[in-house]
Length: 228
Length: 228
Image (tube, rainbow over the protein chains, first blue to last red):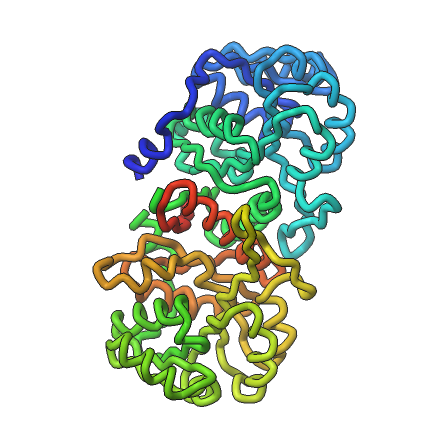
């Protein structure tokens, strides 16, 4: 699998000097991603509706992570990761449309519902969170990625290597290459191109299956592709 | 990953004496599964609309595989794998409803469309092929599995180990355990519980993403779960 990691990393851009922003960076998934990128040496800014909450979460994360409002975060970074709850997804992107013009925006939101039988995929009028983002941000370079990572593993400082591939979805090759490279910065993680925007729904929804796997096997499952 | 294979195999039933039937066993996926089960020492019967075609395909597969009509196949085996094209899925299951009563029926059909941009998930009125099978076969024990295996790898006799997990979906624990055990009979393969029937759509549709991966990396990709 290490050989695969190398071969899929060929010709990816150097992203070590990029500043990464995480909208919804005070949530579990956002904090986990911010922590891993900060630990890997990237400059990281987390955003929240409330600047004080963002600053407090950033201080807790450490690794030089800064916390500001979502608007300040989106304006000040090179790549913006959207890690807000699905309920706030459309409203946030509409609010930030202008400040996100021209930027690479990485959507990692999974529209899921939960009931007594576990998790299930919510219907999304646009087809998927990624397709909704593409529609709401027509002048941004929208990519889907980081859907299947366990927040519990991301935030656990005892875990050095995150044993998981990241499926990177999008119609803009330069942008998906950049996000694949970003994923590859985190030890153990590998960014693999995973298809076009129209095939995002099933990648987001697969998280419901991972929830079922986690419950059955009492684990935090991840996804790897073989043969790549 | 071997440790995970062992832990997920705990308490699975012994399936070495089962006879496996493959409906649509003359197609690429069906032939591949029949070949792998036959090679692993199971008794295998493939079905086709035309008995002569089934017999010819069985002779080509070898490993003691027999070929008969789909109806004879469904009637004579313990576990029935449905590997027909999506276009013929509903009609075949309606035809075989009575003969499939009480049997474990394993659906591995992926409702996909193809165009100039590659593969995409077709809309399915019932939600997924698996949900359609559950509705059409109310007295069978319907399980979803074997969606992500490359037929090219399955039929390649030079490949000894199929490096892939099989996500097994269903609401009947005894039936999903049995299908997990079946998957585990094939060297390299591992059956992992993957969630309820209602979460089958995304597992079927993910095959469209694997098609995109295969095209980008010129490979035959498979799926593994980490942490299990």
